[in-house]
Length: 282
Ligand SMILES: NC(=O)c1ccc[n+]([C@@H]2O[C@H](COP(=O)([O-])OP(=O)(O)OC[C@H]3O[C@@H](n4cnc5c(N)ncnc54)[C@H](O)[C@@H]3O)[C@@H](O)[C@H]2O)c1
Image 1 (spheres, rainbow, N blue to C red):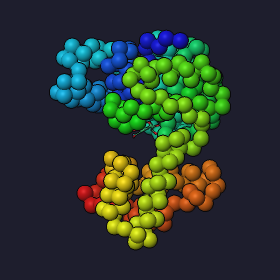
Image 2 (cartoon, helix red, strand yellow; image 1 turned 60 degrees about the horizontal axis):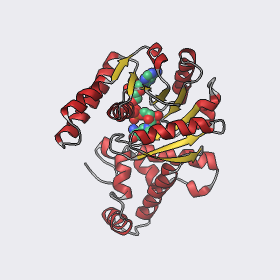
Image 3 (cartoon, rainbow, N blue to C red; image 1 turned 90 degrees about the vertical axis):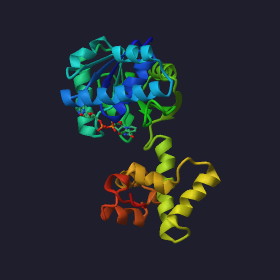
């Protein structure tokens, strides 16, 4: 199936990034949010991001104008009828996503593929709530979308091969590298990344090394661009803890035990950059 027009639900951090990636690649976009204010904020972010690419000579003035002209915005789900694929990138809340999927089933022709950008909710479980379980798939983009090359394409138990292939092709058209992933908590990247961060808190708590030295070791010894503790501060310590709690519950395996020091920092409100203090002080 050739995808010419993509619907994006949510004009937030991920939604406007996905809309930008599509528009720059010549794909028409319909970006939906719940309020005019949210839409205008998303559009301003998208335009600002294109300006930065323009300043770095990555795109031309004409390309910027063409990309912006491809993005239509609305608060009305009926505007999605002309799309071949809708990517849901609304707030991470299962009940909200299920409600959105029902709204999509009500307006979209049956052949339209629906993808979700969820970071943590089971693709199989969400697929089961739709009237198109075989045409439902995970498309997990990374932040910031215009810069990050990876898209995890997650097949739920019900996802058809045709659906997987169609979104894989789209990801490639966006200049991304797709990887095929089976539905499982954390998919691939977060399944490996967050337990690594959790382990860094155990290492810190045991006094094996100072925070700066743990981060320097992982940067210089593993060629990571950022150390695990600095990264935890960026992601948010509360988010890291919530993910470990999910793994602990889903896998029922003590290897996913959240580090007591991570829990202690979260209890203190030391959540990282967003609260001004985490492992480091900002
Ligand atoms: N931020 C990240 O780093 C990141 C990375 C990968 C995946 N994700 C996932 O992407 C999704 C979006 O995250 P985000 O960081 O962009 O959130 P965000 O809070 O920046 O944006 C969410 C947007 O969804 C809108 N929204 C809420 N209900 C809606 C509805 N019924 N219809 C249309 N729009 C609605 C909100 O108004 C908001 O603008 C989540 O599922 C998240 O887990 C986030």
